[in-house]
Length: 209
Image (tube, rainbow, N blue to C red):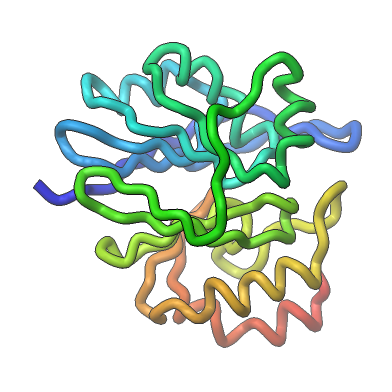
């Protein structure tokens, strides 16, 4: 059986730089009836574990280290035995939320993760945070963009460890070069496609956000 994509929306807060905001997060689950992989264990380990069910969880992949994307990761890992993976450039963000725990492994640009016979390639896309990554699954025609690219533009860069020119470079060089029909599955809100977003790059640069 080919891998399929599951989806859970969880709710909680995002805190950084002394502020806290209510957020809804997309949690993506890629796999088949036997095994799966979770992208961004946000807010609610119970809800994510229920969606995983009795499948073997091969990894908990964090697209970046902001607390709303990793807050449930240690609890889900403890429950399932799955390793938590994070790009090392975001370890300082992880430690703000989980000072007494560390990820189990590192993500690196070009690394290939395999689940249910499906390959997901790690694309290092800094800008929203230094260690932000996207996961490209060509056989599924999709990229999991975390908070790097949304419907309507790039992720926010107004807080610590973020940089607007860097996120624009990441989107231009790593995402807009993907096939235009590639579905973009985002960290929050509705998805989009590469083809729908690519024509607007110059507008985003002009807006500067």
